Length: 202
Image 1 (tube, rainbow, N blue to C red):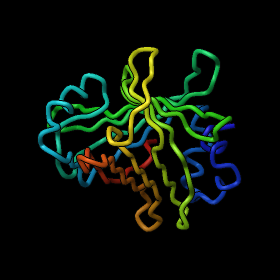
Image 2 (cartoon, rainbow, N blue to C red; image 1 turned 45 degrees about the vertical axis):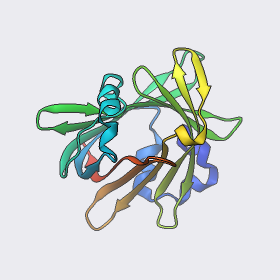
Image 3 (tube, helix red, strand yellow; image 1 turned 90 degrees about the vertical axis):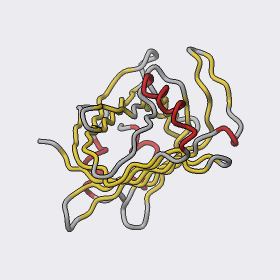
Image 4 (cartoon, one colour; image 1 turned 135 degrees about the vertical axis):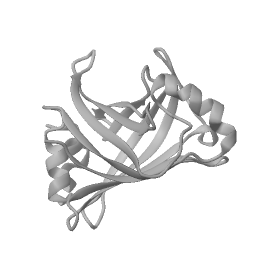
């Protein structure tokens, strides 16, 4: 059973039909979409060096802008202990530069959450809680986080965490998926955010 329908249970059927279609077979076959980020913003300027370092791990990037082309891909994988995983690749195209925001996700049946390893190789881990909105949209909220150092993981106090909120919906009038992402820190405020739209590639 797909990891996203497992974590949502009966709520999965409340998703917009197009979101159900997109997530139903996500572990069985690759998916690719493309679109435009209407806005990408990066928060505090002093974080520029940290975000530039993040480009090496395909996690963060310092660029900002409007109407930035991007692609999104999901690819099924099998983990070391045989668990189903989904590799996410998000690529943003800034005037010839390719920037990434990648992750590897799997389902934890004991805790009923999605496990999210961010970056390549991973430098951050986060629990993800999924809920369905009244309009059939998918709401994703990060919870407990850990810094990853190889095979060692260290829990992060909340003041060091980047709390992510993701909302994905489908616009029936325009026939596009809409995505809104915001990552906030309790002290630093916005780390980065973006909002845009995309369609399935044939």
